[in-house]
Length: 218
Image 1 (cartoon, helix red, strand yellow):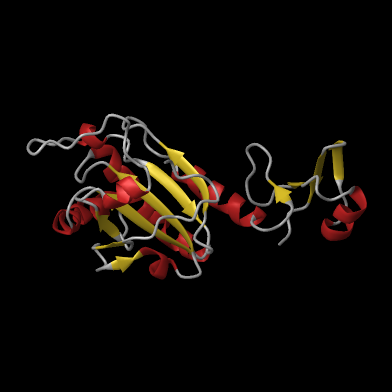
Image 2 (image 1 turned 180 degrees about the vertical axis):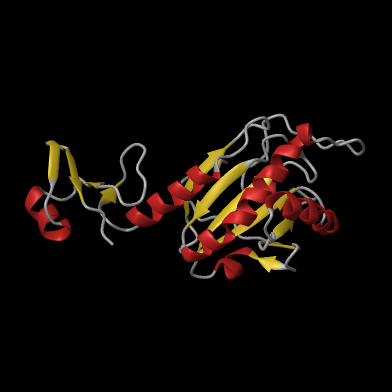
């Protein structure tokens, strides 16, 4: 069964470049981003891990832990980290899970429909769409998912924007409009009438009876 928004993210215990990790315990009261890759030493994935390495301080500002999943061993990950850091120009200060067993990939439904693992000669194409992003809340529930084909590099500016939007609307009657970025107005949920919305969020900019904007809370 696929992982749906508001499902509790699967818990797991696995070896990683940061030692043995029990996922829910490791996450604690932070947000989490799980992002996966089909294999180490692949070109697109190296650029993506380099981008994450550069963004680790920004994720930390947002109380967000980042963890990578790749279906290779910790020993291979440690070697690959040198390439990631050389390309990204920043230390890869986040764990990368050893998922040679595919335990995590299967639990998070990351594998393509026709995946298979030959006993010899495995290529990244065998696990091609193990290229998924999950944003997970402190309550361990999935807030957002994105899946990419092997040929399309992820836009981490969009992932960061999505994280900001998730955090801006988490647990409050607000939503973000198309192309929203932090600092722009947000949409007030229809669960509040105009009076309630004004009391809670201040002056409204009413575009349509069902489309009401307010300043984003700080």
